[in-house]
Amino acid sequence: MNVLQPMEVSQRLEQLTELSVALSSDRDITHLLERILRAAKGMTHADGGTLYRTSSDRAGLCFSITMNDTLKMNLGGTSGMPINIPDIPLLDADGEPNMHAVAAYAAHTGKSVNIRNVYETELFNFSGMRQFDENYGYRSQSLLTVPMKDHEGELVGVLQLINAREPKSGATRPFSDTDQRFIEALASQAAIAITNRQLIERLETLFESFVKLINIGIDEKSPHTGRHCEHVPELTMMLAEAVHETDAGPLAEFSMSERDRRELWLAGLLHDCGKITTPVHVVEKATKLQTLYDRIQTVDTRFEVLKRDARIRALEKKCAMLEGGRQTDAAAIEAQLAEEIAGLDDDREFLRRANIGGEFMRPDDQERVSRIAAYQWNGPDGSMQPLLDAEEENNLKIRAGTLNEEEREIINNHIVVTIRMLESLPWPRHLENVPEYAGGHHERMDGKGYPKGLTREQMSLQARMMAIADIFEALTAKDRPYKKGKTLSESLQILGGFVQRNHIDPDLFDVFVRKQVYLQYARKFMDPAQIDEVDVHTIPGYVP
Image 1 (tube, rainbow, N blue to C red):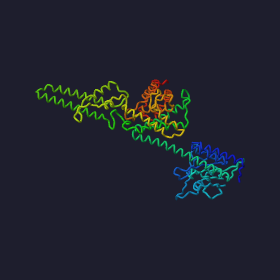
Image 2 (cartoon, rainbow, N blue to C red):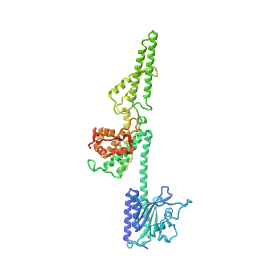
Image 3 (tube, one colour):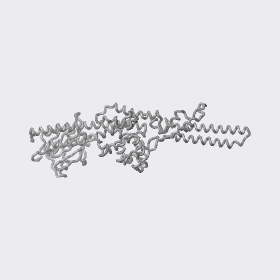
């Protein structure tokens, strides 16, 4: 029997302690499993080992990692080499527990199995192991199989070691009782560590799913905003990675860990979560007169009334002319009517065009709206009233876009709601910056943004990245109800103008153009028809 010396027992206890600390800090589940198997092999001087995980349906044991020093075999885990071995079923064809496979037996009973020589026992079916030996010219002998159960007794996996060796001679020996107890202790620690890691991953997945649920709610209100919520985090991460890879200039010191990336990604997903409270008729306002419907149709009806009244007046004039015995004025009346009708049609078409939001409405056109608004028409109650009421007139005179001041304040309030929603959550330390990153994408470098009027120095680099991503996505998006998507070159021209007006960060814009982040995004998300030739020498605010 292999008897451990006090020094070796002390070393194993120290290994268990060190492994316990390591398991609690390792966040990569694959790396965690590999560390467990290597520790078990090293502790018992085993030549090989396999770690099984329970399948997602808990109907079998999956080969997760397998190693063998003699065969120089390392499959699964971080090796990247696949394990093409069928799962071990936990139930037989009749639905009864599979007690023939040693790993399945350990899984069902919760007991360790320590076999001195697999070729000298009839307790289990080792045909698969013997076939392995024949294929690889190997000789399996001693075997230790230990179930891995968490603190609630749930099976996490099975740890199996093969061919313990004498440290000095290298001769194969059985696994001792001490070996078994140490591996059972390790398996217990490992099972709890794996369970904790899985729980954290599930909570993170649940949280990200909850975030996506909010975006689904926004998407249901407005399909256009939903795509925005998907694309802004993608573009933000593209820009962040480009800055991370920059090794010269004012941003050369910026770097990101995986935690940093996750934090920024979540902030991107949540940057417009406050829009879940924004009224649909504001979010979806495609034209200046749109509320629950586009009221330009109502204005069209009023024009038809004006044209009808013009025809009635012309007929009345003709009747009066005939009664007076005059016939020479009929052509003049018809000509005057045609001119009046043409003028009304022209005014109606002008209002239709004005109703479509644009980037800039000329003062002359705004004055024309006011003149047309003053036309008098006979309303449903028989009283004469202006063609446009004050609210309609003001909406049609909106200088840019489709939103009036009140509606713009409603839209702008979404960022206030976003910040309030995010700041109400108990963020863990590694995500504590999410509210600041998400809440700063409408701030400006000159302090004239909203809602807090922060300057460049008061904003994190990540929030400034998101500001660029938010604007560029909005410029290029072709699914907005109030505008067409701009081409790549047009969008960069406008974005460069924002740099010149001290609206966005010039250093980040330099990376955005120099590293062709815009092109990376365009190829993934933009319509090919929008991707035109870009001459970087003509982009405002950028020095090639």
